[in-house]
Image 1 (cartoon, one colour):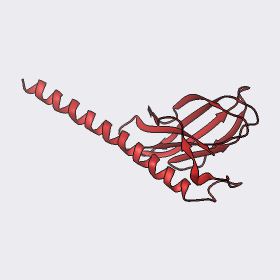
Image 2 (tube, one colour):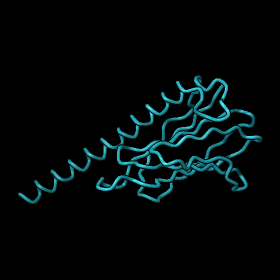
Image 3 (cartoon, rainbow, N blue to C red):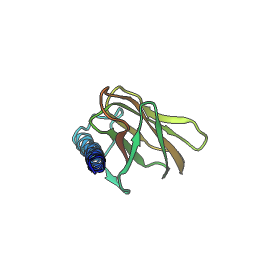
Image 4 (cartoon, one colour):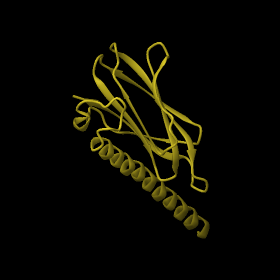
Amino acid sequence: MRKIGSALLLVVLCAAFSFATQDQSINNMNSWVNRIRTSPNMFNPPIPNQMSMYSTEAMEHFQLYPQQRFSVMRFMNANKWYILLASGDNSTKDVDMYVYDQNNVMVVSDSLTDADAACAYRPFTDGTFRIEILLHEAMPGFPMPAWACFQLFQVP
């Protein structure tokens, strides 16, 4: 009976920790979105109407181990600005993002060493693009996998 109680307690604690880290990634993403909305010089060249960016989709959540990639496909219209954002939980040290066109050519990337990634892109033609998010590095001592999230925004 004692073993069952201990095992149940361990499962509950693991589940609670897992939810907490998913919440951390959501909080970090919301913070990231607010910083971008209030920093007109975030991208070079600056994006007109950046502060009015809006999302047409729900935030996507996933778990990654260091050096693991998560890939999503998104349709983007020609001549419209898009801002692509990724963020991790508090164990995340470095998240990178790479965007590829229909011909598998990388069109934009963010490989800076930080816990968030942001790419701004304005396609020349309509098409489906592959977005890869890489958990490049996590802090040692944190349980893995790390929670991360991705969201696509359009700029009017």
